[in-house]
Image (tube, rainbow, N blue to C red; front, side):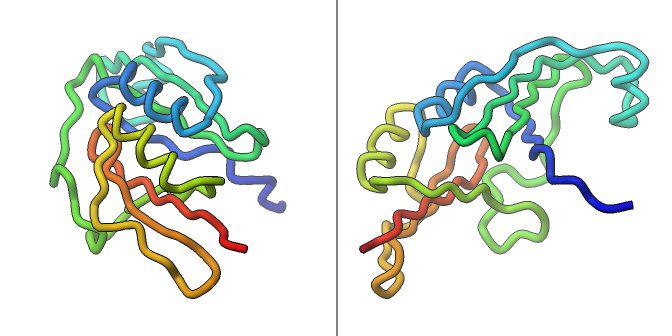
Amino acid sequence: MALKRMDHVGVVVDDLDAAIAFFLELGMELEARMPAEGTWVDQVVGLHDVSVDIAMVRTPDGHNKLELTRFRTPTATTAEPDAPANTIGLRRLMFAVDDIHDTVERLRAHGGELVGEIAQYGEIFLLCYLRGPAGILVALAEELG
């Protein structure tokens, strides 16, 4: 049996509308938005009485998706809010963009905050990290040349 594909990455957020707006401003497209609850959800996530709102956003090419999830019940928790880049575990989502400066400015209007600076990697890329919704690290890369 072979792996078919990576389907999506799930991200828990505290404000679903703000997270959707942030990723739509980045250039992703809203594919679906729906509630989910019931025994099957409890069984999958290993919690009881789960009630969530989910939004699936995808890149314009359709190859990559994010599932944004807001827990109504039980209340979402966090071990370390705004974890730094060297924290063990899933740390960031990387996106290729046409214009990093324009993208950063547009995302600032949706709560995006530069973690460091926009830096140039040789003659290859401009790169930066932003803190996005729910403290998610969003990395941006603009190919040079």
